[in-house]
Each structure stands twice: as structure tokens, then as C-alpha cells.
Length: 202
Image (cartoon, rainbow, N blue to C red; front, side, top):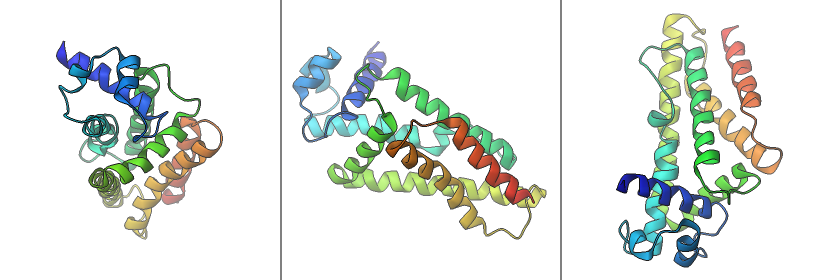
């Protein structure tokens, strides 16, 4: 029961962080929106900023960890990894859309990216950890690409470091595009990744 309460409290607080500046959001607002008391909040942290820190670790860093986000198995093909990656993106987005409160903003991608930028300001070490998570993702892309060259799925003439970063950049670049424009469309991201994959197979 306590774990369920934690998940509910963290998810609802996360939705508030998507619509507020970290420094401006008050614990009174958290109490009102979540229905949890100050004592329940302070069970997880001693201060407001430390509580938000725990929420960010749970709702941002852990969910963006590539090893949790993508169902990778040793030796899977590049094509299968792309599919698994896309499924991980959709699964994570579904959590953000379905598990947080109704206070979710109209463009959650825009709100999410603004929160990520705030993390660096308020929690420099978590900002560094977010960057490390991105680098771990690139490393996994490179491993899958190396296996794809070995198996003959793609040609050996590729600069795998560049290709790995490009695959990751397709996701982050499309996310930025969605943040400043229309809503995030997983089908559009899939079309870009598959198109790049097909170019590598030529």
C-alpha cells in the first residue's frame, strides 16, 4: 500500500512540475492537488527541493534510463532494436499521459523539455546524470550497430559513432520539433528511423 501511495504522490507531483517552475511550486499546492499531507510528503524528504529531487529521479531519470526504457536482448537485429526503442518511447509517453493528473498541459512534450532544462539549474548533479543516461543510450545504439555490421545487416563502411548519435538525435530532434510545433506523433518518428535504417542497408 505504501508503495502505491508513493507512486501516486510522485506521479501527481510530477504533473505539477510540468506546469510550474520548480522554485515557485509550493508544498501547499502539492498537498491540495495530491490529497497527501505534509507529513506524508516529508516521509520521502526533509525539504521541498529534496522532495522534488526524489520525484525527478523517479519520474524522469529512471524512466529515461535506456536499460529500463527499451526491452533489449543480446544479439537482436538493428531493425528489431529500432522497433523496441520505438515501443519504449510509446510506453514511456503513455505513462506520462495516463498516469499523471488531469493537470497535464496541452503540449506535454514542450512542458517536459522545459522541466529537463530546469533540472540542470536546480539540481546540477541530476543534470549531469541525465547527460550520462543519454551517453549510455548512444553506447547501446553503437553496440547494436556493431552487431549489425558483424551480421551483415548493414555495411561495414559506416562511422558507427556518428550513426549511433544520429539515431539518438532523430528522437531528441523530433521531440524538440514536437515541443515547438504540433503534437508528438510516434508514427512520424518511426518513419524517420526506418528511413534512416533503410539508407544504411543500401
